Length: 401
Image 1 (cartoon, rainbow, N blue to C red):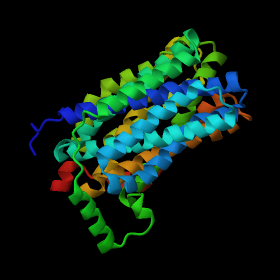
Image 2: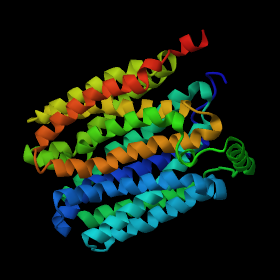
Image 3: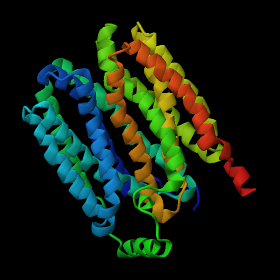
């Protein structure tokens, strides 16, 4: 396909808009639900971290099982069912639940998001021109970037000014919007695709794991797991840390600055990766992320806090985009759905389990120390990346030579 093959098709725009709204809802709730669990339900810090993370654990399970639904019901039906469930469980937040019941709701809410968002990622991977896949996934991930910025910004602002019930109303309205937009997407269910998968299963006789995981995408997904654990402490506890250093108002702009940095860099990093390979992005990104986390541990001014946010966008934000692109490129067209699912399973595991274990660590260290140790872990990720993937990378020009 030529460089002129369009990226911004009708389906691309509609799928990206749903992804934006799903991510926005997730981040809107994830920065709010910890405070809600502590203030309204009397949860401990570790329990609140679990309330935050269990949504992502549900998302992980949804991604693991979505392949079976795709084979049986097709992409659009699976997506619609996931979005209907996402809307239904959005309504349960209006009920004053105890911690155990809230954990169940969070898990099921995440499960439905996992189903829907995996289908969206599969559709995107299949409709993008192969020669522009790095660029296309980079732009698609910008919908996530906007969600990661507007969601926390909106959540923290609403928590300060209008309260939890208004937040739950907004999240339910967004869930309804996702469902309505999904009905406009033209995604034909292709019977021949299911037959191809069945033929592949019968001929290759894959083991149990390969029915859920794309093994070729596993190394880069493990790297994403480690990076997301480092970042999860920022995602879940930045509001508490901001209160400790008396920068709550500034913290409401934290993720907005994070997104601005990604939006600024993405038009350059996507095409650069297509031309030069992923190493030219990944090594600097890990170093920038580590420096950002270190700087966060020392933050005592609004300028420093927002600078940390921008550096995290350049670092972690680009790590996430590049890892997703590498996962998709690692396999064949008929396995792209599994590769996408594998990537998000490990991303979700890091963001989901990370807050719980980091919450337990906060019994022994303060927030500044937590971010310091996270910075060290981010530096160690450079070595892990080199061993698992980086040393094997060749530039596109070298591959074709």
